[in-house]
Amino acid sequence: MPDALSKTVPIWCAVINRIVFPEEFAAGKLHTPAQVVGRSEHAQIEARLNEFVRDGEALNLDIQTIRSKLSKPLRPFWITQDSALPTSQETFEDYLPVICCTASRRVPGAEASEGGYIQGAGDDSEGWSCGLTHAVFWRYQQQLMEASEEDLPGLIESLLAGDTITAGQVEPVLVEPTKQVYIGVTNTVVCTFPEDYDGIVVCSDTMPELPAEDSDTTKKLLRLRCGTGKLGSRALRGELPRLSKFIRHISQDVKVPRILFTCPTGKDLSAGVALAALCLYYDDNGNIPAMPPLVTMTNGYAIGDFTLQQDPRKIDKLYIRRRLSWIAVSHPSANPSRATLQAVKSFLMKSP
Image (cartoon, rainbow, N blue to C red; front, top):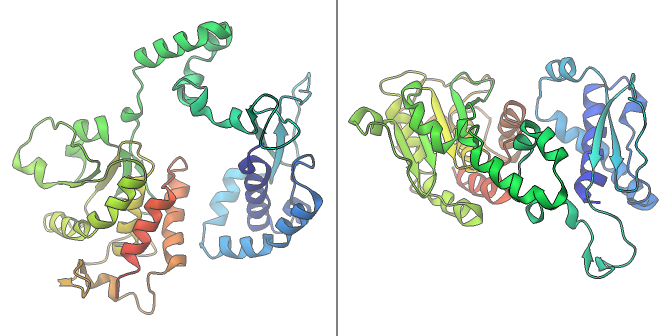
């Protein structure tokens, strides 16, 4: 079973319960699968929960809003190939079940055993999904469930080829509490909706074809030349200094510009660049104060001295995490990689 299901999810459930439902002591208990997590490791994790809770509380999350959506504490359950499924639908009155379903089977021995079977390999969907995504699965679940195993690869290929609801057609997501920062996918979003935004930041090594390359359209576009994966995240470090001049430029005509940040997935680089903008230009209420004169910093990065007038606030790891929580709450599927976050932190925390 992956650590994400046996440890990470249980930690999150316990921490969220302690923050959101502090009066329910039992809800904050750590639950882990005994067949995977030993007593000693369970105790070590439990000893750190209060530390994790303090880190969570430091994000200044809107607890009342979260509680209104959850309504009940979270409780993890694990489903494996050996699990006996209930014959009737169960009702959970005291908590919301978080089902941790693993496709891997558990085998005794080292990491690779029983004829080379690799523990946890079943949960690496890239190895067996044939490109099937959860969204496509739920749209065509009846066809997929009725197909024989040998017919599945061909069926999946045909469904993916004919599926018209592509990732690029997903509506951009507003990052609250701002009213102007959006995150989306590059492909069709940039081509279809440029008139809806005052500025569009494209994080990609290729530029999508524009419907009309007039001067007004090109002025509102900023292309940050970043590929995919770790190389793209590293390239981002050198591209981020261009962001400030672009935001200042589009702010000359619009006091509070609507800005769309895009990348091929709408989850990684776009979220990272949006995070940099949120840290540099937006206050704790998600508003942009009046733009100050442009200054050039000693490290050669041109940014506004709004960054320097935060009284005694400064951009540090906690401040970045708070802004990142805006993205996580508004756009749960956004998942900037560690390399992307390191690039953003390196850029922001070099600021004097």
